[in-house]
Length: 236
Image (cartoon, rainbow, N blue to C red):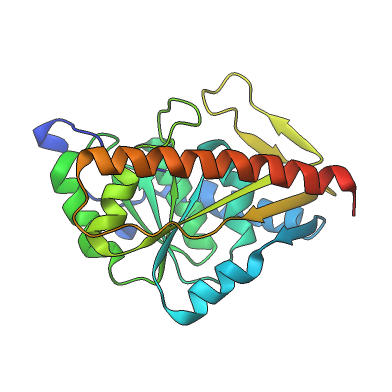
């Protein structure tokens, strides 16, 4: 999952497509997708405001699904069946994530962690062909739960809204050694997912406007974190 900061010239615009995923990444991605499907079959899931997401998708109003990097593992199987584009980093880790995504039917592009304006242009051209995209908004390198201003800049450039979503798990392993505190769902977990309202992004926003929208998106995600926890605490 990717951010859009400034970077080295030699990295700008680089995109790693399906035919460049190495065999080890493909095998790991297939195995992990199988495992996640198996786990999902045991989960009990309750969703708040799912109609908003489904209506956006059905209507063809393009949007970017926005979530925290540490929660992307359960997000991938939850939205299987949606035609969506997922951005991942151009790295060994990104290769595996891209392979997992493809096993769930998503298309992917991999861009440098700090690919600059040229990478942003590639993403604009690619995402414009899809009704939905997905981005971990504080990834791939943090800081933790800080939305990158490149997310609203991208949305502004391609005419997409930003749709925040969060979830909470009753049974999970938290990888405390990672910067994102990645959450790995366990079998037979209860899962509460909270979907927010779309954040409209005007065309041609400034850097200052992008930062304001990033801050607003971050606050929305934190509110959804609380809502998902409350749903889970009530039991189902």
